[in-house]
Length: 317
Image 1 (cartoon, rainbow, N blue to C red):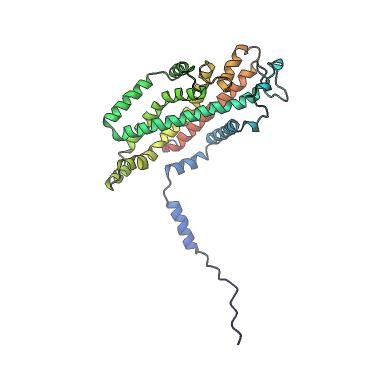
Image 2 (cartoon, helix red, strand yellow):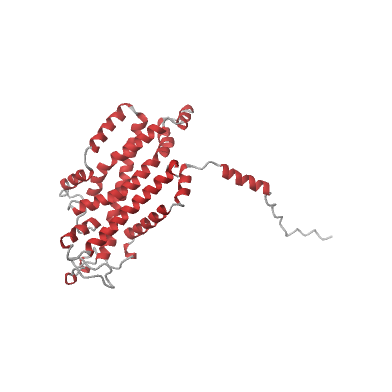
């Protein structure tokens, strides 16, 4: 007799029953959502967030890939022609030319990089320094909290722009890169605000049940600070830092306008405004366009901060 042929048909596993599928969906629905998940769900439904996110995305692409928007490199002096100074907008020069015969559109595009880099870097530094100091001060209390609080009060007594102006002017001739100097000047005076917000948030959070539970199971101080307190205290810091980012960009423009910020041959919107100011009545476009881009950028980050604040605060939903 011939051996029986093996069946070539494989058994298809049975589909899960509707009851099991319903239980899985119910388990997913019953799973508690985190603050950040709820905030992200809320943000996606806010027009203010969508508009600000689109604007910031365009500005970031403009800052880091300027060649996508213009083929003219304003950092090359050969692209400027004095014979065409203060030329009106044309097909090849959308925003016209400035008093040096340089393309205003190209300089505006390339100026976004330094302005945004200074704002973002300063924000990150203030979050790291102020956030860590506020975390330690709020958690440990006692002498550390008292001393650090008194130090921040001294910094709060210094007007930010005036203090940054003094620092930048003092070290302007020290050989330090002008961009790094502006970042340092703004960060030195910006961290106390983040410190105060983080400290208050940690003081509130450390009395919550999840911290008491962590202590009861023998969690160490470092684990409590970085595993439990830090993630639950970041929300107000992120909101304030997002809004401050726009303020730092405006502060850089102010310092550059006053002559102690970004220096040539680097390009920034504040420096462009300062260069165009003496001839504003004769040629207003070289001042108008960088001022417009600066205003839109600052407004976009403020709108983003407001949207994030509303999403993270359950009382405002």
